[in-house]
Length: 192
Length: 92
Image (cartoon, rainbow over all chains, first blue to last red; front, side, top):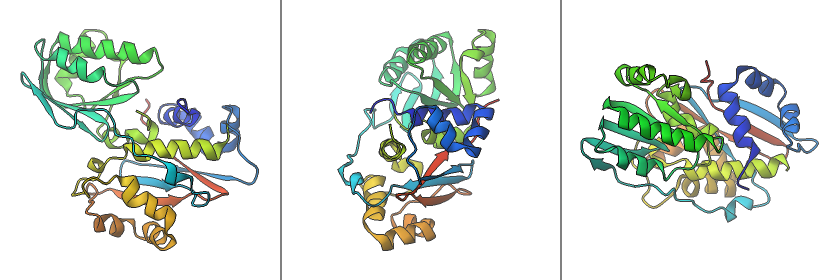
């Protein structure tokens, strides 16, 4: 089951206000419209995560199906990678960058991003400088992901870096999000 | 495609990527969140009750500390009740 339609529906609730309200008020109707069969007698409860409140669902106990589940290790560099003033590390599914993104280390960033095939969060909060090489890498990744309906979320982007997107006329091609998304992104985009 | 099956597939992916680094603190080495918390909760009714009633206490037993100001709540899916958790709204 590579394409779980629930992923798309849940992701859409984060971005589309009308859809979100409809889904909260009439979940069964929305699910059925999206081609998901809701068995009779099943009650659906929609729970909203907030910036400071996190909900985790325990699967239905009978049937024992969860016991067959396996632990999937994401294929990522476990250790922080450092190169030419740029440090890259994975934290809870977000790629955290710190330091300077320059023409020297941009290829390394591209190599790391190339491992990712699905929507991801890139945390730029600790980036002090990004040149056009870094911009090109993000743009190439965004282009590659968008062909599959996926995208990059840029998290906590400092103003000087954001200005670069603005100057290049590229700010509309990326979704800028606040720090809260860094830890909560996976609720909407669980399959990496 | 039926909702219960899709939901379990969704949760399976979710637990796989709910990594210990989300909760800043010591964590049982070599153990996933799924193996340490979810699986026992599915198998053991008393553990599940405890997790539903006082999640912070259970998590701190496992050395997990939530970022300050953040609360966590567990919800229980059953044969006839399915919870769908949606993220905060981040659109324009």
